[in-house]
Image (cartoon, rainbow, N blue to C red):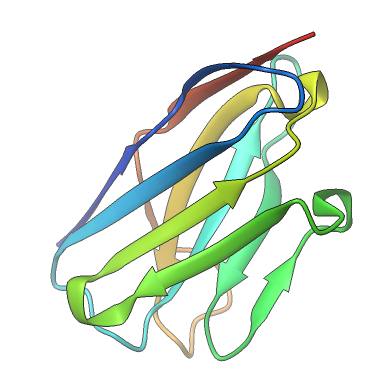
Amino acid sequence: QVQLIESGGGLVQAGGSLRLSCAGIGRIFEDYAMGWFRQAPGKAREFVAESGVSTTYADFVKGRFIISRDRAKYMVYLQMNNLEPEDTAVYYCASRRPYVGNYEYWGQGIQVTVSA
């Protein structure tokens, strides 16, 4: 069983920064892909970034966000810079086995609110 626990969310003004952290607990392995998704009010959940065989980002990140991980500690981070009110959402950490296409494990989500 895999648990993912996010931390680091909160309220920030536009133009500010936040760093989200996600701890993987349980039967999670270094080769698992780990990623971040988000869901804004009234919208569908959307992909933000992934660290797996390669690192990928959603187009809207525009170089503002950086995903990183510490594989030995089963941690993944999302550094978010130059935040915009449109980035307000619940952010989710997720993980999947390397040969599985869909994400299998999800955190409970953490709120990020960006004020104008």
